[in-house]
Image (cartoon, rainbow, N blue to C red; front, side, top):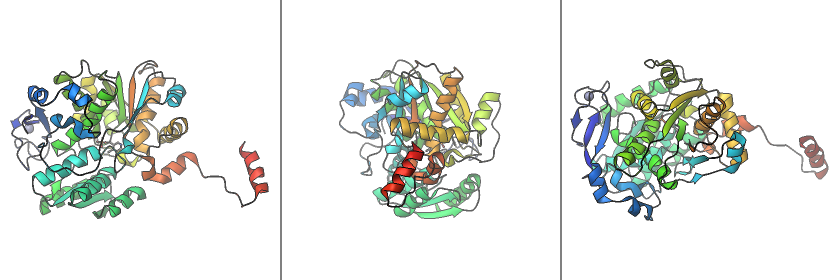
Length: 413
Ligand SMILES: *Cc1c(COP(=O)(O)O)cnc(C)c1O
Ligand SMILES: [Zn+2]
């Protein structure tokens, strides 16, 4: 990895060389000490140019190989992760009163969430480190994504999920052949048990807050947004926040591009949580350290009462001059309807929470109607069909009779 200088501790700034098995800061110990990957931007520019990337026919996140902490010759799964579409849906723009709104639909990854960007790095690293088994705890998507990418790579996966995980995600896990441990408790309980088991069995750890390489995979969503906008950076990027790894990754992506000289300014980053579980939004708005909260929202992917990457997440928002906002579950269901009906885009609750937050921030006048905004849809709606039905209701039921159909249609119209 000629492009990687080392790993730097987010807490104490200590730098270490990126050796196999080093995830957290040796000085800070296991409590804190989350690491960041530090790049040699000159080397990145020696390896590749913006023009070369723009002409690349690798329609996946690996078009940005020179920005990633993997060996170019490392084995990679065959799955196409990344290069998801960036749409400018006119209907949605109109319904929100915005003239420059883009949706990055990351529900279109192989396992239907943005998590694939991190999981594919996890399995590449696991094989680099000769680990036969990968493991993680997850609210659902990191799990199904790791299981899918592990299957593609010929690795075993062991997955810890809280008992509330939706059926669609459990089905994915079983289909991808994972060993699934359904923990009868909260996500916090699930995370703790997985950490103990990973240590005990020596599995490769895909927990995104602890493993510094995973945020690097997630950052490719930002590189794609920049490139898809012709390297003309948006004013705002808005997305949902759970543990905080995704928003940290988005900010890292734009910063890396900026430091490499590929873009000439940085966007503001806005993070959105549900009012039913908003530890990071509360900390940001009240300008105080975060405190644990209950996990009481339909947006299961961001129902994270004890976030694992709070500092990186809050740094991303603050350094960018961005903001945070919490929205109700009702507003999340409304965003599901709005995206579906105006644009043909189907997101799971946490997938559309960013769009719900955008609506709130536009109404408050924080985001202007003419500003260039990218809202990231982080997961596909088919993962959680029960909540989708909750958002839109049941279909019209009729006997197989035209007469009855005509009667019922009249009622509808
Ligand atoms: C994981 C996830 C998020 C939040 O990512 P964090 O890194 O936990 O903040 C948002 N939306 C979906 C669909 C997710 O799966
Ligand atoms: Zn440290």
